[in-house]
Amino acid sequence: MARTVLSSPTQEVIIGFDQPFVMIGERINPTNRPKFSKELKDGNYWRVVKEAKRQVEAGAQVLDVNVGVPLSDEAKIMSEVIALLQTEVQCPLVIDSSVKPALESGLEAYQGRPLVNSVTGEEESLEFVLPLIAKHDCAVVAISNDDTGISEDPDVRFEVAKRIVERAADHGIKAEDVVVDPLVMPVGAINSAGRDVFRLVRRLREELGVNTTCGASNVAFGLPNRHTVHNAFLPMLQAAGMTSAILNVYDEGLVPAIKAGDMLAGNDPDCANWINANRPKPAPGEAVGGRRGGGRRVGRGGRGRRG
Amino acid sequence: MARTVLSSPTQEVIIGFDQPFVMIGERINPTNRPKFSKELKDGNYWRVVKEAKRQVEAGAQVLDVNVGVPLSDEAKIMSEVIALLQTEVQCPLVIDSSVKPALESGLEAYQGRPLVNSVTGEEESLEFVLPLIAKHDCAVVAISNDDTGISEDPDVRFEVAKRIVERAADHGIKAEDVVVDPLVMPVGAINSAGRDVFRLVRRLREELGVNTTCGASNVAFGLPNRHTVHNAFLPMLQAAGMTSAILNVYDEGLVPAIKAGDMLAGNDPDCANWINANRPKPAPGEAVGGRRGGGRRVGRGGRGRRG
Image: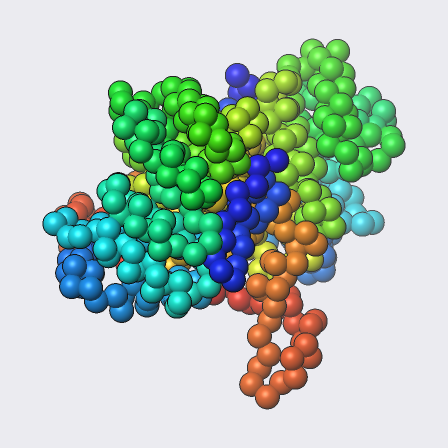
């Protein structure tokens, strides 16, 4: 049973078949955010720290760190941001870059066992990233596209993932340290995109024995009422056996939906996390624990409070 | 591919693998509702009609009709209620009773092709209900318990379902007219209850080729924040391949969650139902269709409106 162990100096997070779903916060990312981009370029990291703390508070167990700004010294920024974040938050981080020196400098700066995002099935990526993962004994996200591009056929994507896992093994990297991203297509463009990914996740889990992750927001691209789509999609992925995702933990209702999904997928022993997360808050001045029987009030009367 | 056809004089609803999930409204049921019970006993059916119309408006495609009140003439009530409802609403109905004469009188009164709820694997039930289904050429919910009770082992429940389908075949009833209820246990009592039912639904679909249904509300029995559990559970059931459920369509957010689930399960061609259901409403005085570009406002700004 795959167990991908990520760590910081003070925390360990396990992505695994029998573990609660791991929510990786996606918000440390300057794409389409001009102010954020300029600040990063200027070495001003206050927003990185703010987004980190806010995401952890909202429920993220791991944070994706992407500092990709065109025409910047991404290696320097990555190294500084990783070092800073490890003094500001406790959780493990994802080093997310398509720039080789930034992956290297991020890995040098990191204390603990990070997740690297990502290696693909492209020859150049395999040859650069896998030796780095082996050298630093960490885990990697494997994206199932290769030199021919992204296949719309989920069976082709399965074969690409299988090949990456095999190539990783050649470098001494265990399958449990390869977290496969089966690639989620927008359901508005490919109507079978959701169904395809559910089947693919089951195959990756049952046949390759690997953990899985995805960029969940892509599925609803171009559609109205996206947060309701996300709130349904994540539990469906959990039912199919997905074990983590990179997502927007601020998305209304998403964290409770995933916690309910954990319980329904059998990964919340005695429903303890669910019951704790939904414990009635004592009224001002009331002793804590004094309204245990009021649980029903929160369950029924708490409508509308999904955050 | 199983297609269970239900009909009224004016509407046809198909439960099927490639169809939108069929929501069966559970609210015509006097259990634990003393006023409703007394009214039914007195032949006063205004609440039945109100619940019927309100559920259809909320999104129910089929209505379960249960008029079980202790010490009443259930056969007479069922017959009258079925006849009345078929003049008041257009949709097909489920005749739901554990009382033999009530099933008979309901079937006699019904115009079209109803679903009968239910037959079990108990010998007495098989011998009484299956001939009735064959005689009236309708469909039946098969509950996977037998004379030994309800097994906690999902594989035993699968075998019971298989036996009911075989017994139905002996009466000339096709597998596609048997809608199996795999029985959903409360996850608070049996932690694997959700996971068990997902696997069971997949087996029923892939190995027996039958449609499935369940009483969805049972899963969250005794837990806080039940509507969030339901909103996660239904899409998970859809991901596993369930094709209908008996549920509370008034439950906040449940109907949108199921419509999102349809789209993500690949059963909403071109996402047409989703886009229609989430079309921005024109402001008063504004021409319809004049704010197509405002879709994003509803998607992001529409937070909190889930109903």
